[in-house]
Image (tube, rainbow, N blue to C red; front, side, top):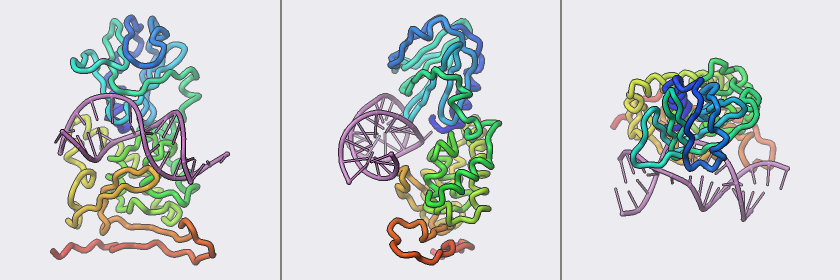
Length: 273
DNA sequence: ATAAATGTTAAGAA
DNA sequence: CTTCTTAACATTTA
C-alpha cells in the first residue's frame, strides 16, 4: 500500500468526502479525537507517502508505513480502525497507520516541488540536490524523501534497472547527464506505477523487484541489502553500470587520482549458459 | 509456522 | 554535534 502512487489513488477515491462535515469520529489513534468532531473537511491532499486531511483550522497527517490499509464507505470486519471519520457524504476508515495532527497551514509545512507525483514537481531542484551530495549512493538517493517524496523500494529497484544504473553508484561519480536521467526516470516510473496499480496490473510489470532473472540478459539477479537505508536491492550486476569514485571512499588518507567511472559490460552480452 | 516485507521514528550508542 | 544502529510498530503473504 505505501508508495506515493497508492496514496494518490486513495486521495482520488476519497475525493467525494471533501467538503463534508464530520459528524462521527472514532478510532484508537493517540490524538485528541474530540477536536475532529464537527469539523469540515476542506480538502484531501497528499505529499509523497503522506495522506493529508485538511480541516478548517488544522490538518490530519496519515502515514501507512508498511502495513496500513483503508476502506472508503465500508469497513473491515476483522480490524479496529485507527481513525474513522463519518458524515453525510460517506465514511473513511484508516487502519494500522500513523496519525498525527498538523497545526500549521500545509503550504507552510510541505514543499510540493519535492513530491514526485505533484503537478508542481521540480526536476531541476532534484538535480541540484543530487549534485550537492556526491558521496550519496543511487539506492539511497531514490529513497530520500527530501529529494523524491513518494518513492519507495519498488520504485527504486525498477527505476535503477530501467536506466541501467547500479544501486551502489555514487552520485558524484556519475555524469550530470546520468543524474538528470535518474530524476526523469523516477518521475516517469511513478506515473507508470500509478496507471498499473489502478488497472491492478502493477505486479506483472515488475522487471526486477522480487524477480529472479534479468529480463534483458537472463542471468540471475543479485539481491542484497544495500545502502544506509538497508533496503533490498534487486539488480542485474551485468546490465546495471556501476559508477564509483575513489575520492568519495571512506578512509583515503592520501590524495588519490580520480578514477573514471567503472563501466561493467556496457554492451551486456548474452550469457552463454 | 516462521520469516520477510511497498516504511518511519525514537532512543541509545559511537 | 553528528551519524549510525536497533527496536518498535502491526499485518499480510510466501
